[in-house]
Image (cartoon, rainbow, N blue to C red; front, top):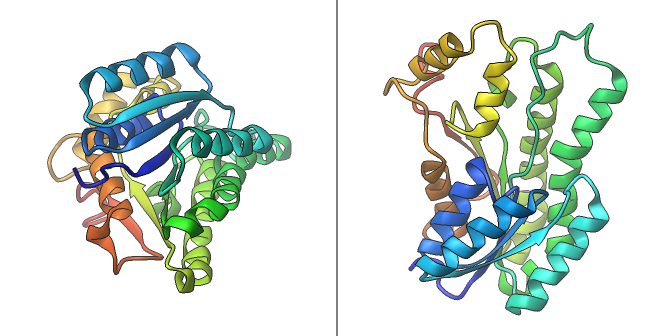
Length: 255
């Protein structure tokens, strides 16, 4: 019960890594606010978590690409739970593989809005409430922020921006007792990963290759990423801030 009676917001919290975070936090007694666009998936997960406990969950429809929707969702969470102890800025998009020639400036701007501006806005709007609890910010970035990825310049850039923001905010907010960290997953078995693979010539072979990149010969699970997020949000990591935790199953070894 490492987060009992504490409140957490998970953006994109109904699927993929966000779902893993929602499940792990709720299992540890948290009050979880699931923010996502898909109402059916969000309501279903919230109902399941409430049935299982010991924490509780609410679903708040939100398109994080609209920063005003995100602001209202954060305020609604605080009204519901009476506090906010952590925001996990997870929501994002991995576009199909495309070369720089194929990537328009307009597309880059849109992806930056979804993947990076939402992270900035989430931290910005959560801050007044996190000051009251000396809370934490956890940003879900990607190993592509430090290793790159073929035909993925736009995505890699947005993920790198998240890491830079993490370090800057850790320095700025540390004196107030607010910790800020990022998680850089490698290949995690999520709908996003499978959607990306589906854009390639041979999806099955692609998934086999990305599984083999980890020293364990498999992709990570969404719950494993949730465990890392919980650690960074809890008092167990009280002396850790400004870090980009590479939760990558050894994929970068012998790179």
